[in-house]
Image 1: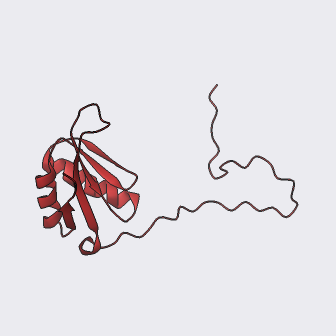
Image 2: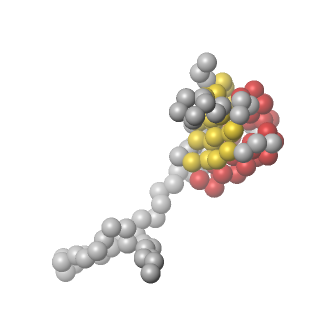
Length: 115
């Protein structure tokens, strides 16, 4: 038998307070800044990834959906895989110059950071 987690009651099991009212978490996501106000950093990295090279895009401010849309565009135009989580986009392989050019074409302020 599988245990189903009830949505909306994170960690609340029982309350003895007679006036207790549960307040649901609404997900305080930040609004997405326009592309010309974003300050993105494009980083090439190999550490902690088993020797695999990745290109990171850090500094995105906005909703998770907009982050996923930008990641999808970058992955498609580079022709590689990757992911988007915790406010950063991971592109497989060394594509920092190509990613930088794509971001500039989309209207984002971006620069290469790191070595």
